[in-house]
Image (cartoon, rainbow, N blue to C red; front, side):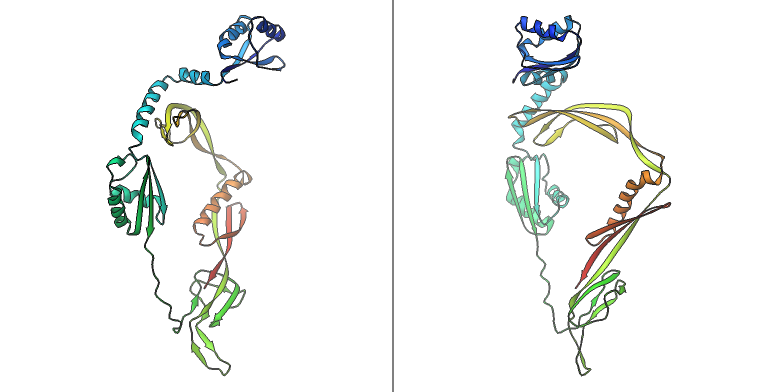
Length: 360
């Protein structure tokens, strides 16, 4: 039923009470009983009468839940700022279409880079787009980014920016000049494909960065040779390590008991709510959507947390140390990871990332 009230209560002689509801002509749309606990769904207009009967018979009312419009009304009673927020939302909606509420970036440049360039030309979230010269913004943005071209399109309160970088044309390769292929990193040779030139390493050889792999020399059967442009590919098995030390403790996050509540509104994906004063916290959110206004009311409850170190064994810390070691190894990784290996001892955990590099 659209506008109803679900009441959950507990006590004795529930059958007599249900019979009393029937005598009072109170419609029951759903009755669920579990032992001494019972829940009934009644029309919203009869909810007060139902609650009064239950209290008169000394039942313990566990929960009252409304559905449909009554739920929104009860929400408004609990959150006294709702009228102000609604008025604020209506005002915002009336003027929002003329202001930039979101910027969508596409193309060859990053979001931060484009956002900085837009700021330099006077465009940001909140800018009055009715006064914008989009053609002028495109030209100035192209200069700021040194881009090949920039497209700026407005759709409602959203600005779409597509910036394409200038293409770098590489000089032609002189195939008649000598060229050698060198190792770009340390590793072990696992494969060699030599199309032109002479391979100076074999599968299984350990090489260091800068070592010669394929020399740009062609040797003929009569013992003579000539310089050539080396062509081929050498595959190296590579790995990097990351180490996380173990000191006999581990970090845990606990709640301090301090709580902060804030009620706000979410409009066009942007949240208007008072900032939490805690540096670290867990948050739970209650939301109520108002359609077709594209508006959501939210109430955030912040629980302050703090990090402590407590005594722990290596096994209790293993997963945390593995993650730390993996992150450290990944920062030094210049290849696609194919396999991860972990080695643990009393001093800590080492993560070894394995992969391959193709050098051409």
